Image (cartoon, rainbow, N blue to C red; front, side):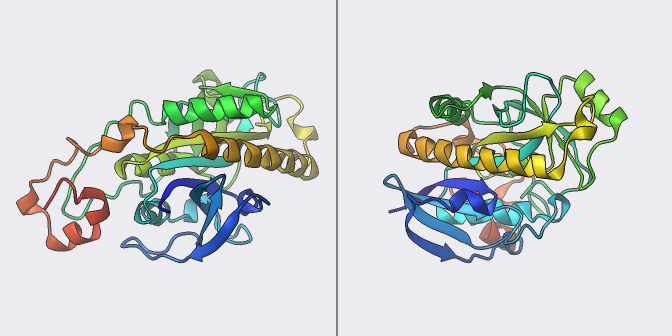
Length: 286
């Protein structure tokens, strides 16, 4: 049974009693090693690959993540759909702790992170006006509401560098820009998934209000962990429902993102690049 659905998030996401026939797959890629082994298992009749984004024991900070290896590894497994889960802060009153937000836009506030597979002899420009899969996000939001979560479909995710949190001035600026939630990881995943022709959606788990909120200073680590624990339990239920209902044969615009994106003439692409990127470009470049 092929693996067509990938889940990226914390290691707690695959601590699910429903998972059967678990196996660890350790992969290497032309871009180095992923954050850890992929846990491949059967969930509600489908094979799913889980990856702990920050590694075992949460040892990698957002700026240290090998985003290219993480997404390339999913491609090697045959994944065509990725649902990502991550903790975020809320930039708007209406998004409360334990809410789930399924954004449709990003604002990039990262610095110097490598977020393309295409360099060193090959150039490609994929469309990114609509950076997330509406089909997958809408399905996940519907599943979340059925599971009893307060779920919001749409919104703008501000991706900051970290690992420090925002200053008050920055938090207020992001609110003035129309930002809805703020996190540190999902933008690079979305860019690389698009280049890999994988449909990608984000499930943002609200754990607290960002520092703009007047009650922010009363928030404790214990409170955030409590909200995160509640969110993980809900996220597990949402993931199971999405896996059950997603028709993996459905097509998303992301699945043909490279069709007219590669600018470099095939004869000018170095042989080593053709070999390394074959899982991505093999159907377009010989």
